[in-house]
Length: 257
Ligand SMILES: NC(=O)c1ccc[n+]([C@@H]2O[C@H](COP(=O)([O-])OP(=O)(O)OC[C@H]3O[C@@H](n4cnc5c(N)ncnc54)[C@H](O)[C@@H]3O)[C@@H](O)[C@H]2O)c1
Image 1 (tube, rainbow, N blue to C red):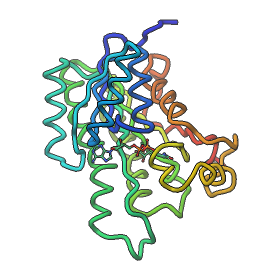
Image 2 (tube, rainbow, N blue to C red):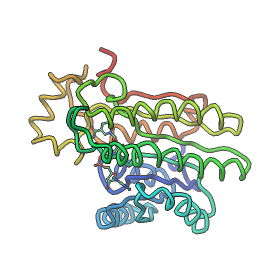
Image 3 (cartoon, helix red, strand yellow):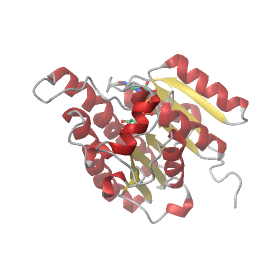
Image 4 (spheres, helix red, strand yellow):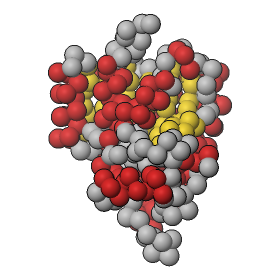
């Protein structure tokens, strides 16, 4: 096995400051990629990047608020100027929104969640996809969906709808970019132990939700950010070259029940 299968590749990972995104930055860097991480949380992102450096990897931080759509093509152009190329895009940044019943959801929160969870991945796939095509093709794109897109009537409608949108964005982009040897896939995590879910309560609440709740999983253990990052890595490796347009569930079977 190649000890550094991503050596020479440049990966752009959004949401790199925390949770699944931070685990993905660390793993892709450990596999040899130069990782450029976008996040709005500049201090946390700086900490992730310095941890990677201590472990011998290469990661760079770029503060980008993905809610500001005009900033996205500009930030991609900066990465291309600084690194010369992008081989891998991972759309991981996401927000859960304020929550609540559809009777109370505000239009403002609907727009904010769609902007970060769905419009930003579209704009990033477009900007990075254009670069990959202009460069002669080849590349990997992975976006983070959620079990909530499949079987979770109790998640807020704005969050669930944004994640369901990732599935179709992925299929459409896979069709448009397939002729250029660009694989476009998604991963759909179930409940995963990150700051997004620890906000729901203490660890015991998360454990109970996994065992008994609507997202109960077959393995009866809470997914860790590294579990999801490992599947994202697989979708960036030569071994997955015939997989495109798919959403791979990393929910320990939750949505297959
Ligand atoms: N944790 C779970 O149970 C779970 C389950 C399914 C899907 N997901 C998805 O996984 C992805 C990662 O979530 P996580 O659980 O690691 O959460 P997290 O809160 O730990 O990380 C999300 C990251 O996105 C960043 N972010 C938020 N808004 C941003 C913006 N406007 N611009 C730039 N960055 C922004 C945050 O600063 C944070 O670093 C999200 O898309 C989430 O919806 C998580």
